View 1: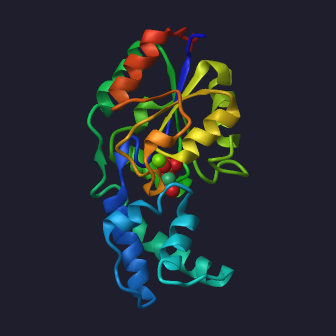
View 2: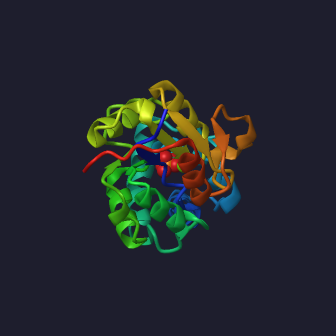
Length: 228
Ligand SMILES: O=C(O)COP(=O)(O)O
Ligand SMILES: [Mg+2]
C-alpha cells in the first residue's frame, strides 16, 4: 500500500500549545476563586477538546461540574484564550522540515484537531502553518470528535483520498483510536501530551521522533501523489 495523504493532529504534534492553554485555564480558575494549576498538570488534561479540558481542570479540585458551571467556565475560558492563543505556542523541532518533505512527496495534507474552529484557524495563521494544509477539520466540524473516526473520515472525503492510503500522525490515544477505527495507518510522536500516559503503550504502526521522521517513514513505504 502506498500513501497519498497525511492527517496531522495539532496540539502536542505540530505545536506546543500548553503554555497558552495554561494561561487561559488559570485565568478562568481565578475568576471562580480557584488556585492556579501547574502547566504539567494541565498538559495531562489536553486531548479530548476544550469541554473536557475544563471538566478535568475542575474535577482535580473534587468538583463534579454540572452543565451550567461547565458552560459558564467555557465562556470564561474562551474569553481568556482568544487573546493569548498562539502567543507562546512553539513549533516542535522538525515540523517545518517534515511538512516541506510531505509537500515534495506530493502528499495531500489536512489538520485534524479536537480544538474548536474559532481557535484553530487563527492559531494556524499566527504560526505560519495555514498555507501547508488543504483542509482543516476541527473539534466542532463533525458531530463527533476524536477518538471517534468521523473527523478523519471527513478529512479523507474532503481530500478525496481513501483511508487506506492515508496516514494519521498524532500524539495521543485519541489519534491512535480514531485512525484505527477509520482503517488508516497511524504514527505517534513521543513529545506531546497523550493525557499523561506513555506513548509506548499506544496501538500505532510506529513511534517517530518528529514530523520530519514521519515523512521519512512514509517515503520509505512508498507514496502515490494524487493530481491536484
Ligand atoms: O483540543 C484538544 O484537546 C487537543 O487538540 P488536538 O486534537 O489538536 O491534540
Ligand atoms: Mg494532540
